[in-house]
Image (cartoon, rainbow over all chains, first blue to last red; front, side, top):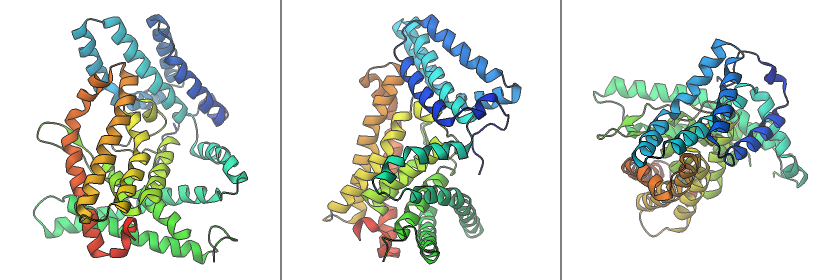
Length: 204
Length: 181
């Protein structure tokens, strides 16, 4: 399982993840209050400079994540030209790219373990209220483990379809696939229980 | 407890893997992915609470940076992008679908899941998604709605498939459809 954290080490990798996330929320909110197109241009250029600073490999993988925005840029572009408010359109496009680029920058410079530490810190109030939050951590680990397992099973189902049928695999495969996942859930549930369960005091 | 955690985690993984299925392009050039079918199934099969939790767990993993969304996308950027509203709608949609399937038991299961998926996966999901789109693109709600209309036929197909799959699942293994357990 590959996470989106960039393998290119930057100084921002060592900044506290919680601080980066809080800063991201604040600055995204701020983006919607700025109305000057020049300010938006300056912000966008600063963010792009931050992408370029750690080197070409970092810049390239960062820009790849922004490519999904181009249909929206085209739509807004055509729209604004048609209604004749081009300056407005430029601002909207820059704001959209800045918001996504900034969030993506945080993802690229924060390790998965640091992110999960923030999630666990955020769930502290729930723990104080008596909710078993270690369950969340086990659930996260389970998903990360089971995605490749299910991918393998899905591939084998597709192969056996191909071996027997001349038509392309269809949505019908989702049925046996879901059954396999539910069976796995049964086994994993039993295995968790056999290893002492998730909450020692509450279970029978 | 253990059983529920395992079911929620496995369904979150299932939603992720459904996103890997190559997207099909409908006759008029609109791509559809199987991931939102996973959201409908989560509610319809697991029921309201577990379904919503499975979707939340999936989105949490996307947010912390795993590329689990259709097309290998992930990270925080997707929540701040133009289609972020749709992502935020998914747990609510799964909950609503599960709730309707749990309560509305007169019609055949396939019909109940089909209608629930339309209300949760289309009406509710598009409502939230369109609000997000109009915020990001600076367009009015009506203008944003007109941009999304092309995707509705694909989602209607998915709602029908979700209905057919859930009812087949109930026949193959009645105990597995927990919304009706």
